[in-house]
Amino acid sequence: MEFLLSAFMGTPVWMWLAFIAIVLALLAFDLGFLHGGGSGAGHEISVRESLKLSSLYIALGLGFGGFVWWQFGGQSAAEYLTAFVVEKSLALDNIFVIALIFSFFAIPRAYQHRVLFWGILGVIVLRAIMIGLGATLVSQYHWVLYIFAAFLVLTGLKMLFMGEKETHLEDNPLLKFMRRRFRVTDKLHGNAFLVRQTDPKTGKMATFLTPLLLALVLIEVADIIFAVDSVPAVFAITTDPYIVYTSNIFAILGLRALYFALAAILHRFAYLKQALAVLLVFIGSKIFIADALDWQKFPASWSLGITFTILASGVLFSLWKTRHEVNNT
Image 1 (spheres, helix red, strand yellow):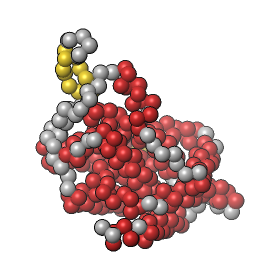
Image 2 (spheres, one colour; image 1 turned 90 degrees about the horizontal axis):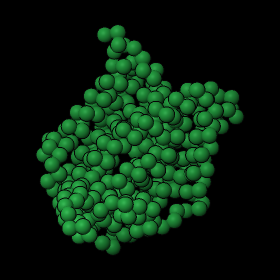
Image 3 (cartoon, one colour; image 1 turned 90 degrees about the vertical axis):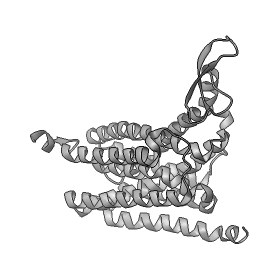
């Protein structure tokens, strides 16, 4: 009992275990109940199903915010909700890349959920490592927060004024390396990541990677790249490792369902990237604004309100600018 009440990274162990239990239950529900034990037998997730799942994950994420408020108070709850909304919004940018990867490898919709499920498992572990390292740095060297903040401001300004280069996956160095160093099949083999077949060069049986596994690897790497923005962004909101990690994971858990709900209408969010750029600049600027005004911390309720305003403006403006595309279809 004493162990459960002891603190790990500033939070009682029982709260960490409760969160892990919730995540494992959701993964088991997703893998076992929804998709037949993870066999990946080609269940195609409909838009209606994905909207229901996405709503469920968002409701659970917001509900966990109520638990944070009960345990830590209104300040921490506002920080959690802000971090959750920011991570969820930045994840939308990730959806653009996921859609590009699936399109490049011609992954059928029926197999996409299998890739995303195992991708999210990897993300949960990788984010734990990155957030753990970030929390250790921040706790020992407070000035690291200023580096995070400056990085976010520069990243936001770059996104806002320099735009982004067009992505050509065929020129991706990692993809070229994998195709050069490993045996890779030319086509999919159902839902398999690896297959055994005859090597045409040696005439012997060998293990081959399939395009499904290549897609999974690229999605994992893409998330690491996106985490370089999102993890510092959340640390600029709060330095509490528990709030940082739980908000990250609850936002990511619903990413798969959100992808299937939004993949067909991504073009309607044409100006969301600009809104995300402004959001990164704002989040990075908070620590400097607080110092300039001699505040101990930027008010969490203000931060939450401004975050909602920026994102809502970006979404509404995008929908308004692309309204003719709907009328013409």
